[in-house]
Image (cartoon, rainbow, N blue to C red; front, side, top):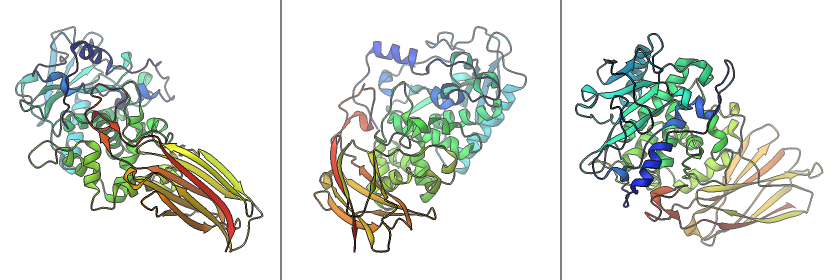
Length: 479
Protein backbone atom coordinates (compact mmCIF):
# COMPACT_ATOMS: atom_id res chain seq x y z
CA UNK A 1 0.00 0.00 0.00
CA UNK A 2 1.44 3.34 -0.97
CA UNK A 3 0.70 6.52 0.92
CA UNK A 4 0.42 9.55 -1.27
CA UNK A 5 1.20 12.42 1.08
CA UNK A 6 4.28 12.99 3.18
CA UNK A 7 4.11 13.79 6.86
CA UNK A 8 5.48 17.25 7.77
CA UNK A 9 8.83 17.39 9.54
CA UNK A 10 7.22 18.57 12.76
CA UNK A 11 4.92 15.57 12.75
CA UNK A 12 7.90 13.30 12.18
CA UNK A 13 9.67 14.71 15.21
CA UNK A 14 6.59 14.06 17.31
CA UNK A 15 6.30 10.53 15.95
CA UNK A 16 9.88 9.73 16.82
CA UNK A 17 9.37 11.06 20.31
CA UNK A 18 6.11 9.33 21.06
CA UNK A 19 5.45 6.37 18.81
CA UNK A 20 7.23 3.79 20.93
CA UNK A 21 6.31 5.22 24.30
CA UNK A 22 3.33 3.66 26.02
CA UNK A 23 1.38 5.10 28.95
CA UNK A 24 3.31 5.14 32.20
CA UNK A 25 3.10 1.92 34.15
CA UNK A 26 4.49 0.88 37.49
CA UNK A 27 6.75 -2.13 37.65
CA UNK A 28 4.95 -5.32 38.46
CA UNK A 29 5.88 -7.22 41.55
CA UNK A 30 6.89 -10.88 41.09
CA UNK A 31 3.84 -13.06 40.61
CA UNK A 32 1.66 -10.16 39.64
CA UNK A 33 0.68 -9.59 36.05
CA UNK A 34 2.14 -6.46 34.59
CA UNK A 35 0.01 -3.91 32.80
CA UNK A 36 -0.26 -4.49 29.04
CA UNK A 37 2.19 -1.67 28.35
CA UNK A 38 4.94 -3.61 30.07
CA UNK A 39 3.79 -7.17 29.69
CA UNK A 40 4.10 -7.39 25.93
CA UNK A 41 6.35 -6.19 23.19
CA UNK A 42 3.24 -5.54 21.15
CA UNK A 43 2.81 -2.11 22.66
CA UNK A 44 6.41 -1.28 21.96
CA UNK A 45 6.25 -1.79 18.22
CA UNK A 46 7.80 1.16 16.45
CA UNK A 47 7.14 1.67 12.78
CA UNK A 48 7.12 5.30 11.73
CA UNK A 49 5.25 6.00 8.50
CA UNK A 50 7.26 5.23 5.40
CA UNK A 51 5.85 8.40 3.89
CA UNK A 52 8.20 10.30 6.16
CA UNK A 53 11.28 8.84 4.50
CA UNK A 54 10.68 9.49 0.84
CA UNK A 55 13.95 11.43 0.84
CA UNK A 56 15.79 8.16 1.50
CA UNK A 57 17.21 9.42 4.80
CA UNK A 58 17.11 7.29 7.91
CA UNK A 59 14.34 8.44 10.23
CA UNK A 60 15.71 6.78 13.35
CA UNK A 61 19.17 6.08 14.71
CA UNK A 62 20.56 2.82 16.02
CA UNK A 63 21.81 2.66 19.61
CA UNK A 64 25.36 2.63 18.22
CA UNK A 65 24.82 5.82 16.21
CA UNK A 66 24.79 8.04 19.28
CA UNK A 67 21.97 10.35 18.24
CA UNK A 68 18.77 8.35 18.54
CA UNK A 69 15.88 10.84 19.03
CA UNK A 70 14.13 8.41 21.39
CA UNK A 71 17.08 8.36 23.76
CA UNK A 72 18.01 4.76 23.01
CA UNK A 73 21.66 5.42 22.18
CA UNK A 74 24.36 3.54 24.03
CA UNK A 75 26.50 5.71 26.31
CA UNK A 76 29.62 3.66 25.71
CA UNK A 77 31.57 2.70 22.61
CA UNK A 78 32.42 -0.71 24.05
CA UNK A 79 29.71 -2.59 22.17
CA UNK A 80 29.92 -6.36 21.72
CA UNK A 81 28.45 -8.32 18.82
CA UNK A 82 27.68 -12.00 18.19
CA UNK A 83 26.13 -13.35 14.99
CA UNK A 84 24.42 -16.45 13.69
CA UNK A 85 23.57 -17.27 10.09
CA UNK A 86 20.91 -14.55 9.83
CA UNK A 87 21.01 -12.41 12.97
CA UNK A 88 23.52 -10.34 14.96
CA UNK A 89 22.97 -9.39 18.60
CA UNK A 90 24.69 -6.26 19.98
CA UNK A 91 25.11 -5.52 23.69
CA UNK A 92 27.17 -3.71 26.31
CA UNK A 93 28.59 -4.99 29.58
CA UNK A 94 28.46 -1.69 31.41
CA UNK A 95 26.18 1.33 32.04
CA UNK A 96 22.44 1.04 32.68
CA UNK A 97 22.16 -1.07 29.53
CA UNK A 98 24.35 -3.88 30.87
CA UNK A 99 22.93 -7.25 29.89
CA UNK A 100 22.07 -9.92 32.40
CA UNK A 101 24.59 -12.75 32.48
CA UNK A 102 24.41 -14.67 29.21
CA UNK A 103 21.32 -12.80 28.06
CA UNK A 104 22.92 -11.99 24.71
CA UNK A 105 23.20 -15.72 24.01
CA UNK A 106 19.64 -16.34 25.18
CA UNK A 107 18.41 -13.59 22.88
CA UNK A 108 20.37 -14.86 19.89
CA UNK A 109 19.09 -18.40 20.44
CA UNK A 110 15.53 -17.17 20.67
CA UNK A 111 15.81 -14.96 17.58
CA UNK A 112 17.21 -17.91 15.63
CA UNK A 113 14.19 -19.97 16.67
CA UNK A 114 11.84 -17.17 15.67
CA UNK A 115 13.50 -16.88 12.26
CA UNK A 116 13.23 -20.64 11.81
CA UNK A 117 9.54 -20.62 12.66
CA UNK A 118 8.37 -17.56 10.74
CA UNK A 119 10.62 -17.82 7.68
CA UNK A 120 11.38 -21.54 7.74
CA UNK A 121 8.19 -23.23 8.93
CA UNK A 122 5.56 -20.70 7.86
CA UNK A 123 7.36 -19.60 4.69
CA UNK A 124 7.30 -15.81 5.04
CA UNK A 125 9.80 -13.61 3.23
CA UNK A 126 12.85 -12.81 5.39
CA UNK A 127 13.69 -9.25 6.49
CA UNK A 128 15.66 -7.29 3.92
CA UNK A 129 19.43 -7.21 4.22
CA UNK A 130 20.76 -3.81 5.32
CA UNK A 131 24.07 -3.74 3.45
CA UNK A 132 26.85 -3.10 5.95
CA UNK A 133 24.75 -1.38 8.59
CA UNK A 134 25.64 -2.95 11.91
CA UNK A 135 28.72 -4.58 10.38
CA UNK A 136 27.06 -6.82 7.79
CA UNK A 137 23.76 -7.40 5.99
CA UNK A 138 22.21 -9.52 8.76
CA UNK A 139 19.28 -8.40 10.90
CA UNK A 140 20.67 -6.50 13.89
CA UNK A 141 19.18 -6.80 17.37
CA UNK A 142 20.37 -4.36 20.04
CA UNK A 143 19.87 -4.97 23.76
CA UNK A 144 18.88 -1.95 25.85
CA UNK A 145 17.25 -1.21 29.18
CA UNK A 146 13.80 -0.50 27.79
CA UNK A 147 11.73 -1.82 30.68
CA UNK A 148 12.63 1.15 32.86
CA UNK A 149 10.98 3.36 30.23
CA UNK A 150 7.80 1.29 30.00
CA UNK A 151 8.25 -0.83 26.89
CA UNK A 152 9.83 -4.09 25.83
CA UNK A 153 11.11 -3.79 22.28
CA UNK A 154 10.63 -2.55 18.75
CA UNK A 155 11.77 -3.16 15.21
CA UNK A 156 12.31 0.17 13.51
CA UNK A 157 11.82 0.84 9.84
CA UNK A 158 15.17 2.31 8.85
CA UNK A 159 15.75 2.86 5.14
CA UNK A 160 13.18 2.63 2.38
CA UNK A 161 14.37 1.05 -0.86
CA UNK A 162 14.84 3.26 -3.91
CA UNK A 163 11.49 2.17 -5.35
CA UNK A 164 9.76 3.23 -2.14
CA UNK A 165 8.11 -0.15 -1.61
CA UNK A 166 10.18 -1.97 1.01
CA UNK A 167 12.40 -1.11 3.96
CA UNK A 168 15.31 -2.40 5.95
CA UNK A 169 15.01 -2.47 9.72
CA UNK A 170 16.74 -3.28 12.97
CA UNK A 171 15.38 -4.33 16.35
CA UNK A 172 15.92 -3.21 19.94
CA UNK A 173 14.90 -5.54 22.78
CA UNK A 174 15.11 -5.24 26.54
CA UNK A 175 18.45 -6.22 28.08
CA UNK A 176 17.10 -8.67 30.66
CA UNK A 177 13.26 -8.75 30.70
CA UNK A 178 13.39 -8.74 34.47
CA UNK A 179 10.35 -10.26 36.10
CA UNK A 180 10.16 -7.29 38.47
CA UNK A 181 9.53 -5.05 35.46
CA UNK A 182 7.51 -7.30 33.19
CA UNK A 183 5.58 -9.56 35.56
CA UNK A 184 6.48 -12.82 33.81
CA UNK A 185 9.63 -14.94 33.67
CA UNK A 186 12.25 -13.31 31.41
CA UNK A 187 12.38 -15.92 28.66
CA UNK A 188 8.59 -15.97 28.34
CA UNK A 189 8.54 -12.21 27.81
CA UNK A 190 11.43 -12.48 25.37
CA UNK A 191 9.63 -15.10 23.28
CA UNK A 192 6.51 -13.02 22.69
CA UNK A 193 8.39 -9.77 22.15
CA UNK A 194 10.92 -11.39 19.81
CA UNK A 195 8.36 -12.97 17.52
CA UNK A 196 6.10 -9.91 17.45
CA UNK A 197 8.92 -7.54 16.58
CA UNK A 198 10.61 -9.93 14.17
CA UNK A 199 7.35 -10.19 12.26
CA UNK A 200 7.34 -6.40 11.98
CA UNK A 201 10.73 -6.66 10.26
CA UNK A 202 9.28 -9.33 7.97
CA UNK A 203 6.36 -7.07 7.10
CA UNK A 204 8.74 -4.38 5.80
CA UNK A 205 9.86 -6.93 3.19
CA UNK A 206 6.25 -7.12 1.96
CA UNK A 207 5.24 -3.48 2.11
CA UNK A 208 7.02 -0.70 3.95
CA UNK A 209 3.83 1.25 4.35
CA UNK A 210 0.90 -1.01 5.23
CA UNK A 211 -2.09 -0.12 7.39
CA UNK A 212 -1.42 -0.02 11.13
CA UNK A 213 -4.35 -2.24 12.12
CA UNK A 214 -3.11 -4.96 9.78
CA UNK A 215 0.53 -4.93 10.81
CA UNK A 216 -0.14 -4.95 14.56
CA UNK A 217 -3.05 -7.38 14.64
CA UNK A 218 -1.14 -9.96 12.58
CA UNK A 219 2.05 -9.46 14.60
CA UNK A 220 0.09 -10.05 17.81
CA UNK A 221 -1.54 -13.11 16.19
CA UNK A 222 1.96 -14.40 15.47
CA UNK A 223 2.62 -14.37 19.23
CA UNK A 224 -0.21 -16.86 19.62
CA UNK A 225 1.30 -19.16 17.01
CA UNK A 226 4.88 -19.13 18.29
CA UNK A 227 4.44 -18.67 22.04
CA UNK A 228 0.96 -20.03 22.65
CA UNK A 229 1.74 -20.95 26.25
CA UNK A 230 2.73 -17.40 27.27
CA UNK A 231 -0.59 -15.69 26.46
CA UNK A 232 0.49 -12.06 26.76
CA UNK A 233 -1.65 -11.38 23.71
CA UNK A 234 -4.71 -12.09 25.83
CA UNK A 235 -3.97 -8.87 27.71
CA UNK A 236 -5.23 -6.98 24.67
CA UNK A 237 -8.52 -8.79 24.06
CA UNK A 238 -10.23 -6.23 26.27
CA UNK A 239 -9.38 -3.54 23.70
CA UNK A 240 -10.49 -5.37 20.55
CA UNK A 241 -13.76 -6.47 19.00
CA UNK A 242 -14.39 -9.32 21.42
CA UNK A 243 -14.94 -6.72 24.13
CA UNK A 244 -15.97 -3.77 21.94
CA UNK A 245 -17.82 -5.08 18.85
CA UNK A 246 -18.93 -1.56 17.92
CA UNK A 247 -15.32 -0.67 17.02
CA UNK A 248 -14.37 -1.28 13.38
CA UNK A 249 -11.98 -4.15 12.77
CA UNK A 250 -9.56 -1.85 10.97
CA UNK A 251 -9.42 0.78 13.70
CA UNK A 252 -5.91 1.76 14.79
CA UNK A 253 -5.25 4.30 17.52
CA UNK A 254 -1.81 5.82 17.87
CA UNK A 255 -1.75 5.68 21.66
CA UNK A 256 -4.28 2.88 22.02
CA UNK A 257 -4.62 -0.86 21.69
CA UNK A 258 -7.54 -2.00 19.49
CA UNK A 259 -5.14 -2.99 16.70
CA UNK A 260 -3.44 -5.39 19.13
CA UNK A 261 -6.67 -6.82 20.51
CA UNK A 262 -7.99 -7.74 17.09
CA UNK A 263 -5.47 -10.56 16.66
CA UNK A 264 -8.54 -12.63 17.52
CA UNK A 265 -9.91 -12.09 14.01
CA UNK A 266 -6.86 -13.80 12.47
CA UNK A 267 -7.16 -16.57 15.03
CA UNK A 268 -10.75 -17.11 13.93
CA UNK A 269 -9.68 -17.41 10.30
CA UNK A 270 -6.61 -19.55 10.92
CA UNK A 271 -8.48 -22.06 13.09
CA UNK A 272 -10.86 -22.64 10.19
CA UNK A 273 -8.70 -22.09 7.12
CA UNK A 274 -5.21 -22.88 8.42
CA UNK A 275 -2.36 -20.59 9.44
CA UNK A 276 -1.47 -20.02 5.81
CA UNK A 277 -4.45 -17.72 5.33
CA UNK A 278 -2.58 -14.89 7.07
CA UNK A 279 0.41 -15.34 4.77
CA UNK A 280 -1.97 -15.34 1.80
CA UNK A 281 -3.31 -11.95 2.86
CA UNK A 282 0.21 -10.57 3.27
CA UNK A 283 1.10 -11.89 -0.19
CA UNK A 284 -1.93 -10.10 -1.62
CA UNK A 285 -0.70 -6.95 0.10
CA UNK A 286 2.90 -7.46 -1.01
CA UNK A 287 4.48 -4.90 -3.30
CA UNK A 288 6.92 -7.38 -4.85
CA UNK A 289 6.56 -8.78 -8.37
CA UNK A 290 4.26 -11.67 -7.52
CA UNK A 291 2.40 -9.79 -4.78
CA UNK A 292 -1.05 -8.32 -5.11
CA UNK A 293 -0.10 -4.66 -4.41
CA UNK A 294 -3.31 -4.24 -2.42
CA UNK A 295 -4.05 -2.38 0.79
CA UNK A 296 -4.93 -4.35 3.89
CA UNK A 297 -8.70 -4.85 3.69
CA UNK A 298 -8.58 -5.18 -0.07
CA UNK A 299 -5.99 -7.97 0.31
CA UNK A 300 -8.12 -9.67 2.96
CA UNK A 301 -11.25 -9.68 0.78
CA UNK A 302 -9.25 -11.02 -2.16
CA UNK A 303 -7.63 -13.80 -0.14
CA UNK A 304 -11.05 -15.00 1.04
CA UNK A 305 -12.68 -14.77 -2.38
CA UNK A 306 -12.66 -18.52 -2.99
CA UNK A 307 -13.17 -19.47 0.66
CA UNK A 308 -16.63 -18.05 1.20
CA UNK A 309 -17.30 -14.33 1.02
CA UNK A 310 -15.53 -11.99 3.40
CA UNK A 311 -18.85 -10.55 4.57
CA UNK A 312 -20.15 -13.94 5.66
CA UNK A 313 -16.85 -14.90 7.32
CA UNK A 314 -16.79 -11.61 9.19
CA UNK A 315 -20.42 -11.98 10.29
CA UNK A 316 -19.82 -15.48 11.67
CA UNK A 317 -16.68 -14.25 13.42
CA UNK A 318 -18.67 -11.45 15.07
CA UNK A 319 -21.30 -13.97 16.19
CA UNK A 320 -18.64 -16.36 17.52
CA UNK A 321 -17.28 -13.60 19.74
CA UNK A 322 -20.47 -13.78 21.80
CA UNK A 323 -19.41 -17.26 22.98
CA UNK A 324 -15.60 -17.57 22.59
CA UNK A 325 -15.54 -20.83 24.51
CA UNK A 326 -17.42 -22.42 21.61
CA UNK A 327 -15.86 -20.42 18.79
CA UNK A 328 -12.14 -20.72 19.62
CA UNK A 329 -9.98 -23.55 20.88
CA UNK A 330 -8.81 -21.50 23.88
CA UNK A 331 -11.67 -19.01 24.02
CA UNK A 332 -13.04 -20.45 27.22
CA UNK A 333 -9.92 -19.18 29.02
CA UNK A 334 -10.13 -15.60 27.81
CA UNK A 335 -12.57 -14.39 30.45
CA UNK A 336 -14.14 -12.12 27.85
CA UNK A 337 -17.12 -12.30 25.49
CA UNK A 338 -18.83 -9.78 23.24
CA UNK A 339 -21.46 -7.83 25.19
CA UNK A 340 -25.14 -7.52 24.36
CA UNK A 341 -26.37 -4.10 23.28
CA UNK A 342 -29.98 -5.06 24.05
CA UNK A 343 -31.53 -7.97 25.95
CA UNK A 344 -35.15 -9.12 26.14
CA UNK A 345 -37.18 -11.85 27.78
CA UNK A 346 -40.26 -12.62 25.69
CA UNK A 347 -43.48 -14.08 26.95
CA UNK A 348 -45.81 -15.92 24.58
CA UNK A 349 -47.07 -13.54 21.89
CA UNK A 350 -44.91 -10.63 22.98
CA UNK A 351 -42.37 -8.78 20.86
CA UNK A 352 -39.48 -6.34 21.05
CA UNK A 353 -38.47 -3.79 18.42
CA UNK A 354 -35.53 -1.41 18.30
CA UNK A 355 -32.80 0.00 16.09
CA UNK A 356 -29.01 0.04 16.29
CA UNK A 357 -26.47 2.09 14.35
CA UNK A 358 -23.37 0.23 13.22
CA UNK A 359 -20.13 1.48 11.67
CA UNK A 360 -18.20 -0.41 8.99
CA UNK A 361 -16.60 -3.74 9.99
CA UNK A 362 -18.45 -3.68 13.28
CA UNK A 363 -21.44 -5.39 14.86
CA UNK A 364 -24.14 -5.29 17.51
CA UNK A 365 -25.58 -8.16 19.57
CA UNK A 366 -29.12 -8.64 20.87
CA UNK A 367 -30.05 -11.38 23.33
CA UNK A 368 -33.58 -12.85 23.26
CA UNK A 369 -34.61 -15.25 26.01
CA UNK A 370 -37.87 -17.24 26.21
CA UNK A 371 -39.86 -16.77 29.39
CA UNK A 372 -40.05 -19.91 31.53
CA UNK A 373 -43.70 -20.32 30.46
CA UNK A 374 -42.88 -20.35 26.72
CA UNK A 375 -42.75 -24.11 26.30
CA UNK A 376 -43.63 -26.65 23.67
CA UNK A 377 -42.25 -27.74 20.31
CA UNK A 378 -44.52 -25.28 18.50
CA UNK A 379 -42.90 -22.24 20.11
CA UNK A 380 -40.93 -20.03 17.72
CA UNK A 381 -39.23 -16.67 17.74
CA UNK A 382 -39.65 -14.74 14.50
CA UNK A 383 -36.85 -12.28 13.78
CA UNK A 384 -37.32 -9.49 11.24
CA UNK A 385 -34.38 -7.36 10.13
CA UNK A 386 -34.50 -4.16 8.11
CA UNK A 387 -30.94 -3.08 7.41
CA UNK A 388 -29.14 -0.92 4.87
CA UNK A 389 -28.99 -1.84 1.20
CA UNK A 390 -26.79 -4.66 0.01
CA UNK A 391 -24.04 -2.27 -1.15
CA UNK A 392 -23.23 -1.78 2.54
CA UNK A 393 -22.84 -5.56 3.00
CA UNK A 394 -25.32 -5.94 5.87
CA UNK A 395 -25.47 -9.34 7.53
CA UNK A 396 -27.52 -10.89 10.32
CA UNK A 397 -26.53 -14.05 12.18
CA UNK A 398 -28.80 -15.88 14.61
CA UNK A 399 -27.18 -18.13 17.20
CA UNK A 400 -29.54 -20.49 19.03
CA UNK A 401 -28.02 -21.68 22.31
CA UNK A 402 -29.59 -24.87 23.60
CA UNK A 403 -29.87 -26.09 27.18
CA UNK A 404 -27.10 -28.61 26.55
CA UNK A 405 -24.73 -25.76 25.62
CA UNK A 406 -24.59 -26.43 21.89
CA UNK A 407 -24.96 -23.48 19.54
CA UNK A 408 -26.50 -23.51 16.06
CA UNK A 409 -25.70 -20.47 13.90
CA UNK A 410 -27.68 -19.33 10.85
CA UNK A 411 -26.81 -16.50 8.48
CA UNK A 412 -30.14 -14.92 7.62
CA UNK A 413 -30.97 -14.15 4.01
CA UNK A 414 -31.35 -10.41 3.42
CA UNK A 415 -32.64 -9.04 0.14
CA UNK A 416 -31.11 -6.18 -1.84
CA UNK A 417 -32.77 -3.69 0.46
CA UNK A 418 -31.34 -5.34 3.55
CA UNK A 419 -34.65 -6.89 4.61
CA UNK A 420 -35.09 -10.46 5.83
CA UNK A 421 -36.91 -12.64 8.34
CA UNK A 422 -36.63 -16.12 9.79
CA UNK A 423 -38.10 -18.21 12.62
CA UNK A 424 -36.32 -20.37 15.18
CA UNK A 425 -37.25 -22.84 17.90
CA UNK A 426 -38.06 -20.97 21.13
CA UNK A 427 -39.09 -23.71 23.56
CA UNK A 428 -37.79 -22.74 27.00
CA UNK A 429 -37.38 -26.43 27.85
CA UNK A 430 -34.84 -26.78 25.05
CA UNK A 431 -33.55 -23.26 24.34
CA UNK A 432 -31.55 -21.10 26.75
CA UNK A 433 -31.52 -17.99 24.57
CA UNK A 434 -31.16 -16.69 21.03
CA UNK A 435 -28.55 -14.14 19.99
CA UNK A 436 -29.03 -11.88 16.99
CA UNK A 437 -25.79 -10.38 15.67
CA UNK A 438 -26.24 -7.52 13.23
CA UNK A 439 -23.20 -6.76 11.10
CA UNK A 440 -21.97 -3.99 8.86
CA UNK A 441 -19.38 -5.82 6.73
CA UNK A 442 -18.71 -2.96 4.34
CA UNK A 443 -15.21 -2.60 2.89
CA UNK A 444 -15.96 0.46 0.76
CA UNK A 445 -13.60 3.37 1.42
CA UNK A 446 -12.73 6.84 0.26
CA UNK A 447 -9.01 6.02 0.18
CA UNK A 448 -5.97 8.28 0.73
CA UNK A 449 -8.13 11.07 2.13
CA UNK A 450 -6.77 11.07 5.70
CA UNK A 451 -3.01 10.37 5.52
CA UNK A 452 -2.18 11.66 9.01
CA UNK A 453 -5.40 10.77 10.80
CA UNK A 454 -5.43 9.29 14.28
CA UNK A 455 -7.39 7.10 14.66
CA UNK A 456 -6.75 5.58 11.25
CA UNK A 457 -8.50 3.01 9.08
CA UNK A 458 -7.77 1.05 5.91
CA UNK A 459 -5.98 2.80 3.02
CA UNK A 460 -5.58 5.99 5.08
CA UNK A 461 -9.18 6.69 4.27
CA UNK A 462 -12.67 6.74 5.66
CA UNK A 463 -15.52 4.31 5.27
CA UNK A 464 -18.33 5.13 2.89
CA UNK A 465 -20.73 3.10 5.02
CA UNK A 466 -20.51 4.22 8.63
CA UNK A 467 -23.55 4.92 10.81
CA UNK A 468 -25.78 2.40 9.06
CA UNK A 469 -29.13 1.80 10.80
CA UNK A 470 -30.54 -1.68 11.40
CA UNK A 471 -34.07 -2.10 12.73
CA UNK A 472 -35.11 -5.45 14.15
CA UNK A 473 -38.15 -7.11 15.68
CA UNK A 474 -38.19 -10.31 17.71
CA UNK A 475 -41.64 -11.84 18.25
CA UNK A 476 -42.63 -14.96 20.21
CA UNK A 477 -45.06 -16.98 18.07
CA UNK A 478 -46.33 -20.51 17.54
CA UNK A 479 -46.68 -22.71 14.47
